[in-house]
Length: 476
Image (cartoon, rainbow, N blue to C red; front, top):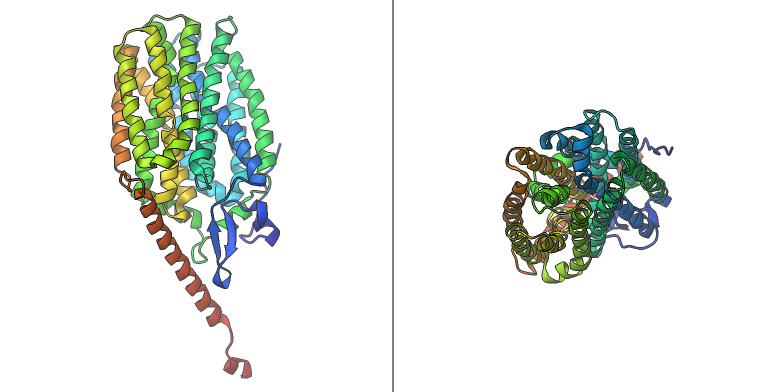
């Protein structure tokens, strides 16, 4: 088992902060040696690290989408109701919440390597215990641990890639990897359970791929230690509790909370649809078990393809306008899915709904990097991504609890209402809907960042001059 290298000092050698080991952008020395950061590119070791994050998101997608395919069999195996079985969705929210609060501290202490080790280990523990198919009350408890691991990766990798050059395209493929995992997961799980293989056997597959993820991530991020992260994100000398103060500053910024609730509801819609579609198609559209599983696969495949293709379109149109258009089209697809009582049409519109919902998460991360100060990217985006990931727990549980009383047909009107809320939150983000609106906000933010850097240089220069002995002092 890999161990986390620690550093008892915030100082690192020149070898650690130059070239390919710099975690948060290339370092260029300004006047008086104050580092200025530029966005990273997908070159050198970053290629391997990016590929490792793709694997992490494949596993994350497989984890989230498996619930939907397995819910009917969990109900039967444990003889439980919609509400009780929905606890497997709700439990990870506690883990996500903890990850949102600890993300910045883990980066400051262990760097990206901390995320690369802790997150896969959390998931590995969860899947290993699930393979033993314990009594049902143990499942929600153990899924809290995987929620913490997924939350760390969701926050850490989104914040890192969202601040790179060509972030729209790179995040599109990153979240496309999530969609890929979510596409193949129900297919594998459905193929197993329809052949009378126990539902928990699916988690043997998850154990194997998570072991691979752990090895790949540790190797790729081995040199991305806490010392490297602190060198790239130097804390003010006057504040020892920098990571905590940075998190507090991020939480005081209204953009952080708009982004957090946008992602919370978006992820909730995404996973609620993916999680309950099989049950909906079985009991409302009266489909066959395998065909219903294919509908869910089509939904997640739509999300995957949408993120990869529309990621190249979004930046060229402008993130604010593009996402507004995607949301309107998603509303139309959702209405058609709901109001046309036909299995085939529902399957088709489920795929289109996924296609246009797909780009929303990565585009929100890109917008955040443009409107938030650079120093808050890890803490603010990390918090919002992890907090938003909790939507995968809350809203599927809410749907299950309501479905217990009203029937699973409540899925569609709930999803429609939540998409409308997403649109309102999106409109409240700064920048307007003109293509250059966000660019103006970003330019203004960069000017403010440069002003703060200049003040830091002046303060450093004043400190050096005060500490330098004068000629009179030397004579004495």
